[in-house]
Length: 390
Image (cartoon, rainbow, N blue to C red; front, side):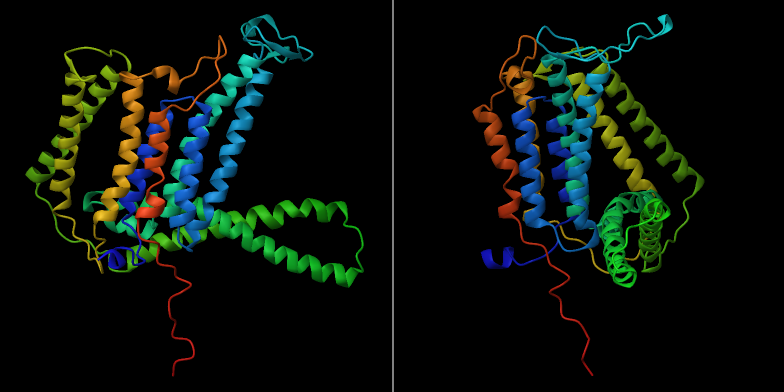
């Protein structure tokens, strides 16, 4: 039974997206750099252990580089604009005077430790969320993701597949273009005797890299969407006027309930009774809005039929994967509402060294479990081919 469970197979794409989004939600409520770095390490471990060898699985490195750029940009922004917020001044840069109509903005000047830490913590939180999305994009098969979407969201799903597959295709196209350039450079060097490049040749690097990479990635993403359209995703069925009116009304009602829930959550928190730190009014609005939207999608999807070659099954591994992400999010929510909120958001003024408490360590351990308790991916490189078979 255990051997059968660990047979290589791809997990349901919704499982990976649910796992990654739950971790991203948990990371969005904390500025603890140790916990955020641990979250990045955990997500990287799961991605490297359970990603396949498909083109979209190779784009995770680009998300890591994007997260590093976000952190560096956020810190540099604090240095350039108002880096002197704090008593601990590290160094002073020559300040650039600005006109009177831009009061409140300062270019350069003193740079404090507190200001740099503000930028570092905030950039690290945003980078963690970006890396979580990149992990889901690397782990989930976009073709299966489109097949698993509700029928009412078929057109939207096709658009999302093109959007989400562009970035991984960029990485693969970039590597392919660089390999071709390396071969051409070697041949040209041998032909020219190793001469130095002219200024025109150096400027031509932009044209020979950016344009081929962008065009190739976009063409491959559009081809992916077109192939999903051709391979059996037909549509049939026409809804009556009353059915369209009912589904539209349910969808608008659900969106309105979710909008009111967002308003109470962000602008007017704490209205109504609470049980175990959960506001009953907000919970009722959230559940009612989600239920109305789901009902609208089900009613609209009854009249949009798509042929499927093979349905992705939801098994124990998918449930455990989503549960690991939800447990981490619940632990962080408990610490933020009932437990010790200072562990999630360490003080900068006065400066307090961040620590990893036992609940945070437990959350990281639980989030790392999908790297070990889920079946390995089925690799396309190991599949038998028809080459050489007569």
